[in-house]
Length: 117
Image (cartoon, rainbow, N blue to C red; front, side):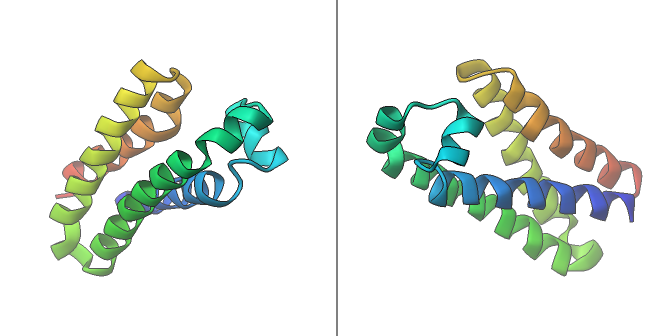
């Protein structure tokens, strides 16, 4: 049950990121969250939407894995591994905050799944 809650938390984080990157990127709230100027947000809006779409695929994969019950654990582990890699890369290339927002919750979910077996 703890693993499912943690996977659900990762899903919620990624749905939030989808909304931020796809719909709020150039809005005042989205610019504040990412620390972007209006000019940069306008120029990079399409790229951010593309990033958001990929985050949506990760959330969808995790939802699919959760919906499969215990049989979905391999799907969850794969998607969580993708989240961890993306979070580590983001921490290195953009900022350390991404490590704690994305990679750490995903790593905790992986640990919970593996310990629950």
